[in-house]
Amino acid sequence: MNTLILTANPADVRRAGGIIASGGLVAFPTETVYGLGANALDPEAVAKVYKAKGRPSDNPMIVHIAFPDGISELTENVTRDMMKLMTAFWPGPLTMVVPRKPIVPDVTTGGLDTVGVRLPESETARLLIAASGCPIAAPSANLSGKPSPTRAEDVIADMDGRIDAIIAGSPARCGIESTVVDMTGEIPVILRPGVITREMLSEVLGKPVEVDPAVAGNVARADTGASSDADASGKAGTGLKDAAVPRAPGMKYKHYAPDAEMKVFAGDPRAVRAAMEKERIELEQAGRRVRTLIYDDAGKAAANFYTDLRCCDAEGVDVILAAALVTEGVGFSVMDRMVRSCGGNIVRVGDADPAENKAYNNGGKKMIAALAADHAGYELKNAVKEHLRERGYKIVDLGTNGPESVDYPAYGKACGEAVASGKADLGVVCCGSGIGISIAANKVKGVRCALCTSEEMGKLCKEHNNANMIALGGRLTDKDLALRIVDAWLDAEFMGGKHQRRIDQLDEI
Image (tube, rainbow, N blue to C red):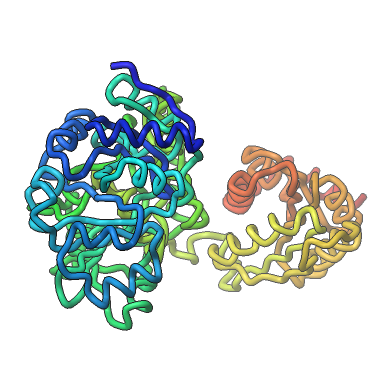
């Protein structure tokens, strides 16, 4: 089959609508992920979607509509609660499961007596639905089980030659699929979490919203300690759970999986990073190609997770090591995808004992870290501050406290003086390159401030130079690398011996 690659301009979208109306298949962008669309009321067209994706026929599809009143074509009774959610979240990444009318064929619903309905935020998607003249059944536009596509190139990689056309639009804003909520009972139940969270739904409805045990139990296996739901027994399960009859897409099968083997590390964040690093080194020494995924923000994780998985596949990565997120809000939704992506391959990492780590403890005294930065290092300083707090340090923040332009010498000197006087046990300073502020810190007698641009430098500056401060470049070093440098410095041990003689000489200068 020759697949047309269309643009998102109105003429091309109308052409794609004609393809849908005539029984064809079109992949199109939405704010969540790219969808693979067919006329939801045409059983033969919908059957082609299952074939193109290699999708199990009991996995229900979501039906997309162009206008709110389109839901009345698909269900008899639009309740007050449904109206509240439509008003609050449509158009947007929310799917409501409702009783279906006979007009909706079994093949679209996976044989269920309910149907999932959503009104997408994407203007391109709504124009396509309107141009087709019919509601569109659209699962994600990927081969079944693979990571969902958030970019046009992802769709082309999976679907070129398998469907009639692809609308190559913008990357998806949300990055994960819509929240699916079952509205058929008195208490709404989330069947698939998304960027619209349980708390958001509950606030609009003015009553509790539950999470399906098949979802909650999976996420609880990788819980990082926040308030996530457990399964019906109150305990995390021992394997990836499948719903006996999936009521929403993505509930039953191992889903969203990359080609690479994937492990998710869950537990104390510091211990997780250490365990991941240890495994990375061991795997690379064994000749495996490894990629680590660590996200510091749930929204960014949602936007980037599928793209990162697909990039790993494109790069030929053998093993993906991912750090679990805190299972609150959107973090809960990302963890649902992450657990399914790895097939339930979770590595639990125990909490670290602060008494066993000198970075946490100095003869029983909690360690104090001083931080300072100029405007160019302000954001990186704040990231390091939060990271050190997670590691158990007390923080002395000497500024600057905003992005307005300031001169770095005063901040480097202030941090150096805090360390040299004993008000702080160690210090971290940041400016654009790290160079100037490190020079300023080293003007203070007793300070040994090392400018570090790699983890190895962070390690060696402690082992050989017993550095009591490090400097980082806010414009040259990305946050993830900077935090790894900090960890390498904190976790290393001064080697003493001949190095102590040299340290003594440095302190005399």
